[in-house]
Amino acid sequence: MKRKRKVAAVAVGMILGLGGCMPQKTDSIHPMIQREGFGQRQNQMEQYLRRKYGNIKYEVTGIIWKFWNQPYDQMNIRIQTEEREENCWVRRYEKNGEIIFTDSYFGLCIRKEYEKKMEKTAKIVFSKVKVFSFTQESEFSQNAEEGLEKLKENGERIRAISWIFVDDRDHFERKVRQFEALWRNEKMESLIVIFLTDEKVFLTVDRDKAEKIVKSCSYLDRKVCDIQWEMTSNLS
Image (cartoon, rainbow, N blue to C red; front, side, top):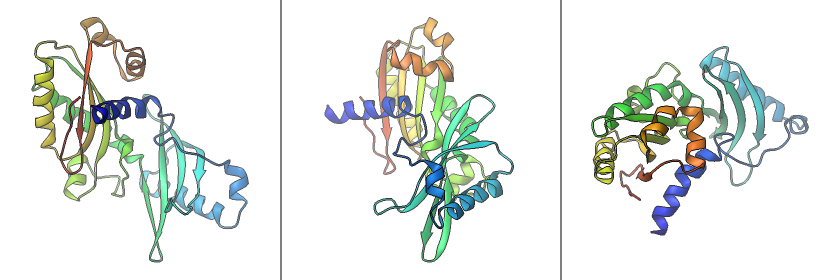
């Protein structure tokens, strides 16, 4: 029972606490870049962003420099998408004399594709479905041109947290288990909370209103599908 409660708390709490993708201690940028080499590291991370994604608009919100228990520099950024502001990060590793960059921004690039795939699967089981995924949980290194299926073929580890809202009261728990079994076949690490709502709430929910609905517990029931990389799961 403790495990199930913890999973539910993580699934809901991680997103409610997402001012950025990863709530971490950050240092003030300007004093830090005065130190030798730190400004160069930031420039390298920003150059990586431009090479991979072109002229995207972003704001640097904080930098966490490499230290003894963190093997990378991390630059947190805020990006204005078509829908809303989103928080992402870029990481800079040094391995065997080579500099390697990864980022979470690509999660936004594939989010619609990911949500569409999850919605299609959920609609096999539930009559009315809305899906909102937080794909910035993944650390991407592939080219920006790659799609979701190509990423999977290349062995990229896809991790995401998702909220699914359904208006379908009949046999809710059984249907959750059916959905979980189907989504397991996608072989992606997924922490999914399925919220059962009434028709009124379901009709009003969108990405921005979803957080308010979750915080106010304006739903009838919820179940969690915790699909780990090793393909095990827990239903609460």
